Length: 462
Image 1 (cartoon, one colour):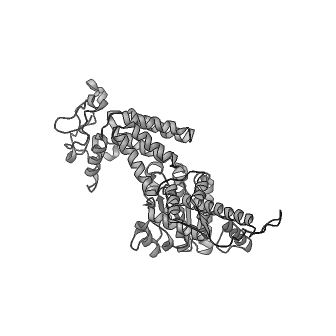
Image 2 (cartoon, one colour):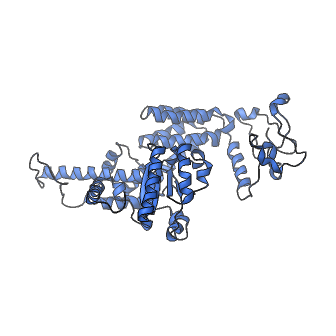
Image 3 (tube, helix red, strand yellow):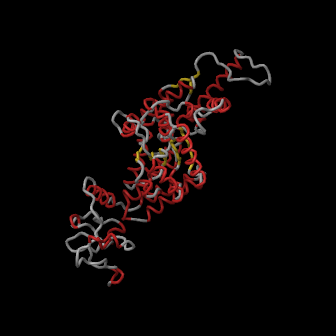
């Protein structure tokens, strides 16, 4: 459908806009209206440069829910006057993609209008769907824009990733969320104290869409409460069961209270500020790391009673299982992951038992940070270093044509199971880093009994 829409389409759009959720009605109209993501939108930044130079390429936005991926995609269409066509990877098939590309070709041929093809949840596209896009992206028929909350290097294939700019969106900071909350309150024509704004921010776990949904529902609740109060006092007369064309106007400003926010969040709202929210998750993690199950249970109870998202707690505990327990008790990761799964399948309030189980197990488990130290050492080695090719004997054996640089007499890969004890001395890293040791076992728990067979002087794991 072209921008020259008929009156019916425009009327339908106006009605949809009027009843759309607050997050849609308050969506920024220009890039300057966007709150946050300054690393992409500030002058000279990647996305701003693309827009200002009118050289829009294909992009994949990668970031957490409510960080602005869809908003930025729509703004690109507004900034370029291109047609915005949206598909969902959850429901669209190859036929839908082909149809969208055919329409894009017709639009460009007949009207000279380019197309931004937006695919939400793009990581759900299978290989066939991704392959259909490749020629259109390569030829510039469309500016492809994908959005994903998942690691694109896992869900998307290399040919697609090589043709797009990967732009990562960061979770919104507290000050940025407060600004969005204030905009939402002003748009809804209600007021709120700083305490209430802080509780709204703390309840949304960095998700701007969730925040605005909370503002919208709390505003409706506050207006309804004021209407009832005015009706009881006789200042507003409601004339029987007739259809009212719009909301009843209540004299004076309506203020959103903590109770309104609690009702909007299904009676779950933090008893503390967002700063205390982060302090409490820190206290929980440090208590478990310090092997104090009672303290861990106390802070867990505080957070759940205050309305904390149990999924947030389970994610942090899963991280702790590897960060602070690690190889001292590898089963800790299994317990933590099972707890996270239970939160999703059982739900609250019963899932509190599963989280308590995880907290007690992790607190009582032996502790080791050797995995954390090891991966940080490896990251330090890799960051800033030139890309080093994989040694020829370790490369994929299914593609031997790449081994043209194999030196005469260079040894082949030695299959460990062909040797006594399923181990053989062999170099597994590039020569210039083969002597560096990253992982050193601690003397805690299971790790104390771990035996590493290293290549003499090389620090190589088998």
